[in-house]
Image 1 (cartoon, rainbow, N blue to C red):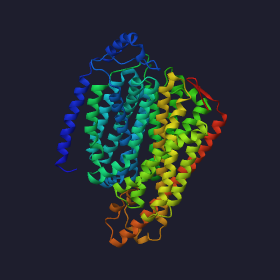
Image 2: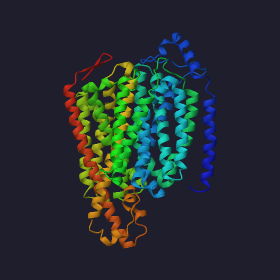
Image 3: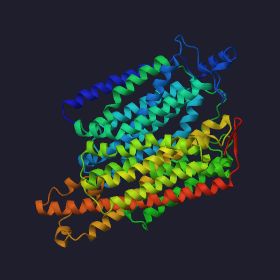
Image 4: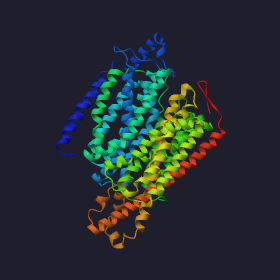
Length: 575
């Protein structure tokens, strides 16, 4: 960022921050006052209560316009989807800017995901207890300030800390926005249409995210991926203040702080161990200590959930084969398909030498197939049970990943991108089949008054799957790339002696040009060729693992489906 644009950006951030302060100051009542007003108003407006026992909207001088509320809440959720997926295309540019290692680049994604996954369940409880509108505005404020921190970050450490803070804001924002939609559209065709509109917005955001990320990165620089959030958050805050009424659940239980802290710490330590293992060594004391501490913390989390009266997670649900099958399918979908939104842009830029925009366009076969996938799933649902459909979707993801891996390993050149795209399409179709059906399958296993918790488990499972796969597949990619590079004939002992200790880390993070810039033209060309081939081989190895894991989980879902009994939810039998 130039010296001329940075002060302007900081000034814009300052005035927008004042707007957020004014927004919070303008909230009309304290939490206790809002709850009293809602409880007083509830008998006179019984139709405003939801199936979860939530209080209706607080009295307001403005009439509620459901369409505008839906547009505002859906736009907030789309902003999170965009931000989650748009960053992957910019990772090589971030690595070049900071001369960052592969572990640093992994943390750009993982810091956000770990914070997001850890905060989803408590964020939903906070929204129910203290007010959805209040938590929504708080989430927007945190997201705004964290985006500003990311855009102005002077180092990769500050960037990753800001990304973690952004994950907290995203969790507050997403859970509150979903609760606002559910509280505005209570039942009937209007509710069905509302969720259909929301789903369409999410699909469009997922589809265009790689292309938008590539264009912003190449035309404006990677910092503007984060800075463009500032005016968007400001507009959304004004819309929320104007259109959304406060609502809360007067019967909400206490927030499970201990459970949230234990789960978040266990997940963070596990990802830390996976990301640092290639450098520290899989058998090192540091890796063993991190893994052991993660296991102990997770055991503590399970114990807290068993003994706590108002636990975040009802562990008895995991005694139902149907519920376990649905959660396993969600984890497989996230870990083996959605994680490709992180690794595919790196592969396209590293192995094919594509620009950021070209890599974004190269992602379109995968993204567009995800849009078509739900229609394929609807057709298959006429011939298969719900759990069988989940198994089919996982099988398609597995086959697609194996086809992509087979094409990626031996062919690292532009002429063979079409073969890789075929595998991407198969994986995308399987992901599209699972995208909505995994959520529906999980929700079908719980009664109506527990759907909030089930939704939290579903979303937490999804993002835990993504961040776990980033750690595992990233470690496989790094190990395979190292071994193939060392075995390449063009990497002679003379060339190897001229490489610094961080060479391979910069190659893995996408900074191949920077890693070879100090070498002679002939040596640089030889090492770049070896690096492109090695990265493609490492990517293929990671995809082989993802493909086999998806197939194994497809078999597991099929076995669990055979043990499950039909679920009766709201009078509907789900097989």
